[in-house]
Image (cartoon, rainbow, N blue to C red; front, side, top):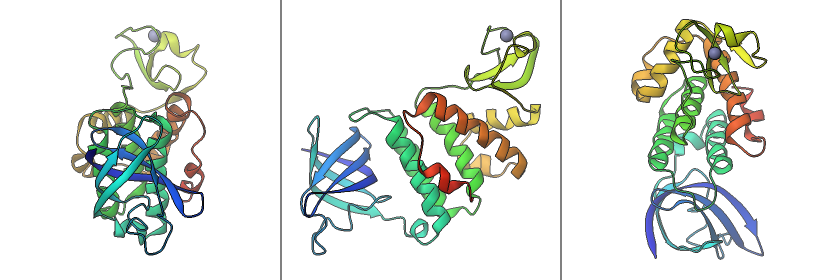
Amino acid sequence: MVTTKAIVLSRKKVAESDVIINLLTRTEGKVRVYVNGARHPKSRFASATQPFNEGVFSLFINKDLSRLSEVQISNPHMTIRADMNKIFLATYMLELVELAIEDGQLIKGLYDKVAYALVALGETEHLQLLKVVYDLKFIVAIGYQPVLFSCSVCGSEANLSTSLSVQHGGVVCHSCLSDCSDCTAFTLEDLKWINIVLKKPFKTVQQLAVSDTMLLKIGTWTNRFIATHVVRRPLKSLKLLSIL
Ligand SMILES: [Zn+2]
């Protein structure tokens, strides 16, 4: 048996009164867990298996389907649950994990980043900013490093434009720009902001001035990058976010 911190990503009803939950665990990566009787109102697992919950889970790990032995919820994220827009964004954040990570896949440091983002979501009112920062940090956490200081097509460090290619995952030089069919033009200020987001903690990023127009432009690019490189099927929760 393994005892680990975990966040409930999703919960699906099965059989009469059981559920299957997907967990992002700190030590075992993403894990599918069968929970007997969790839909009985009196079950001790009824509320513990709700999405967004963070806690300490004791699991019998199995390759296909693990089992839940014990759980102690440490943070039910009540401030997220009290605000519909925060629920939508939390749903998006966790669906991104669910679609980007394979069952059993462990990415070091990812759990802490997602846990931190949920706490930040509970506290912030600037949801659009948090969404873009989360996307960029998530992309880096799972191994994609947007290329900002050399051409993502030819590798040249000279003659760089400020346009970003989705397909190539970074800036392109002026020679490659004419052949780039998926490039978005950014300003140097936009790229400097992206660079700081990639390197600095959310607390620092929150203090930087950023306009809604800039966030919308960068957010549109990260959405396209994620759809192209990160997830295997479209994120359903993204539709709900368009109202943010
Ligand atoms: Zn080039």
